[in-house]
Structures are given as C-alpha cells and as structure tokens.
Amino acid sequence: MKIKMPIMRLFVVLLLVFSQGISARMYQWLDADTGSTQLSGKPPMWYRSASPGPRVFVFDNGRLMDDTAIEVDDEVREQLRRRAFILAEEDQQKAKDKLAKSLEMQQKFVKDKPKKVELVDTEDSQQQISSLSLTLKSLIKY
Image 1 (cartoon, one colour):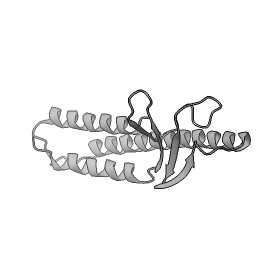
Image 2 (cartoon, one colour):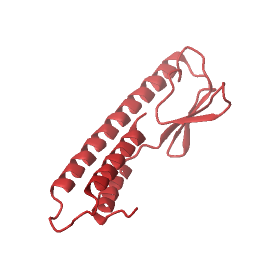
Image 3 (cartoon, one colour):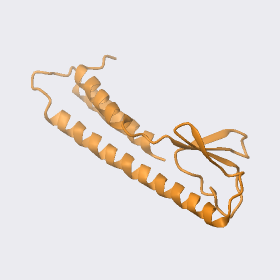
Image 4 (cartoon, one colour):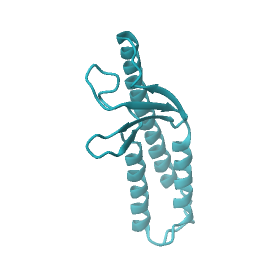
C-alpha cells in the first residue's frame, strides 16, 4: 500500500506535536503474580500508601528519584504520594491538550489541502487518518 505525501506530512506534524515535552517520569515494579516488570507513566495505586504493595522505583529522566523500600516518615511519604498523583494528572491533561491540538491541526490540514492533490483512494486515505488518530489516542491513554 502506497502512502500519499499529504498523509505523510500529517503524520510528521502529529509526531512533532506529540514528541515535544514528553514526560520522562516512570514507575517500575515487579508484578507478584506474573513475575514480570511493569512500567507506567503514572504511579500504581499503592505507591507510598499505608497499605502494602510491591516495591516501586521512580525514575525521572533516567535518574532514580524514589525507592519505596527506603523508609520515610509519614509526612514525607504523604508528600511523595500527593506529588506523584498530581504530576500524573498534569501529564494526562497535557496529553489531552496535545491530542486536541493535533486533531485541530488534522482538521485544518484536511480542510486546507490543495485542490490539485488528488488521492487515488480517498476512502482508504480517510481510514489511514482515522487509524493514525486512534493510534495516537491509545498511545497517550494511561
């Protein structure tokens, strides 16, 4: 299947929009049931809570920022927990804003495309745009 030039330009624009300001905060823990390492951009529910859970490592831009195996007093624990969930919420809002901006750009691109450019298979091209949009939406969901 041949991808037409306007579709490629749209993909590049969307890629640039989503690549700016991506958060590098990651939470890592070992799943007790499967034994596999889990990675997430948002903290697990038990992170720094009073209830027990698997050990969690927090990395920010490749640096270890927190390790739940290190005991801290209740005040510090609550501050770390609150900050982690606030950051996760902010990251989610930023991702939603970027998605809205990219969809707006996509609409403008489709609306303002030159009359000369003819797509061989318009329905196929629209499916590709929809598929790209759904893919980008699923990438930013937590």
